[in-house]
Length: 297
Image 1 (cartoon, rainbow, N blue to C red):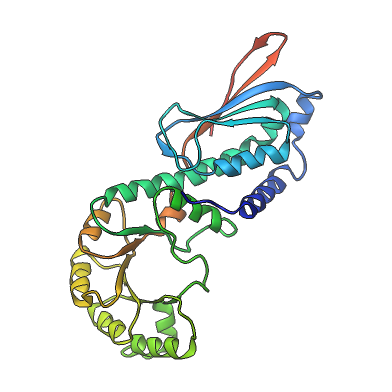
Image 2 (image 1 turned 180 degrees about the vertical axis):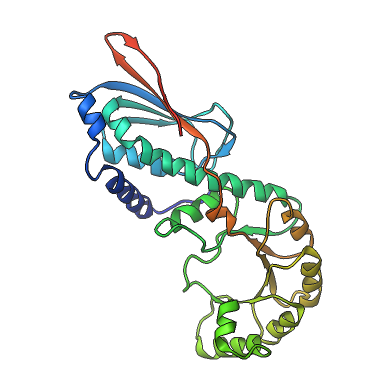
């Protein structure tokens, strides 16, 4: 199972709490002047793949290290509607102050993991990787890509330094439209002393020919139909890995996989995944009585 370095979690939590608690929690402070013992639980309101638990736990710890935190499900686990993800005990003021940031991590990242899982299930039976892209929220890339891996996906490059990827605007800037792909391949090979993957994005079968001539390691077929992808795969014939990207949805991803590519990259995994629906239920305890306060998403 994928793991996220603690430094990335701590940085994200610090940023989230500075944003939300930088001026204090004036509502909670006004209503509760003393510690208020409470219990809370975070509940899934839909089937989902859990992601962000480590960040949520870290959020509560930073706000109040005395809180007792008991996760029922770990990152990467499948949750059903009604499942409890996390039990929390301690000062209710601390729970209230940390609640929104903790839920933000769980909702957003579980949404990504859940959508990724749906894409992976849609292509079961085919030997193809479902991959993310760099279309991520600034500052959240490590977390979002972690969520993709928790959902069964594979991470594409995390920065511009991870591989050479010649895209349409690189080709446009070169100016020589007819020979742009061949020229780009020649320049990239000549100027870069690296063993990192060399990827070329193409939009037509003629550009596939050029990418093969330029000895690309991976040929990225951009916005092609499944029929066109099948023709390109046949043309490439194992001389390079084949990646499909652009316009891939849950409706057509299986047809794309059936066309024979090695990998399918999907920007929507991180830029369009709907947030998972979760709620935090709080139980304050005073003089032997308790009442439940349900805090929705």
